[in-house]
Length: 123
Image 1 (cartoon, rainbow, N blue to C red):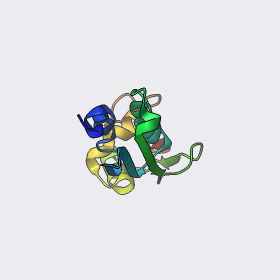
Image 2: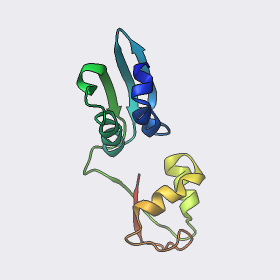
Image 3: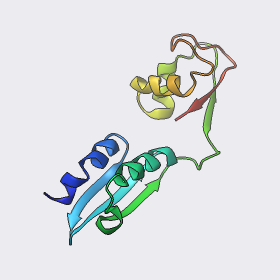
């Protein structure tokens, strides 16, 4: 069994978040790539650290491309806006509207009901 098999859980957790690769060579698993947020980076590291020997197995260069923690991006809703349109403009995909909804559940109860003036946090 190779290191990719050993770290299958971490590789699975990284899918859709991690832009790069995990390559096995010289008896180590080399992770090199980017993620959008510190939270995504932490999630991958938490998954890696479920293996007790991770310090001997892993060499990682995972960079965060989004804003630093504490500098979250926000968007102020304008008349006629929809979460889908906001997601398309700011996240690159209209289908990512649920990410915005989930992040703002403290002020939203329905993804189809947003109001001008609301300040939404963006992933």
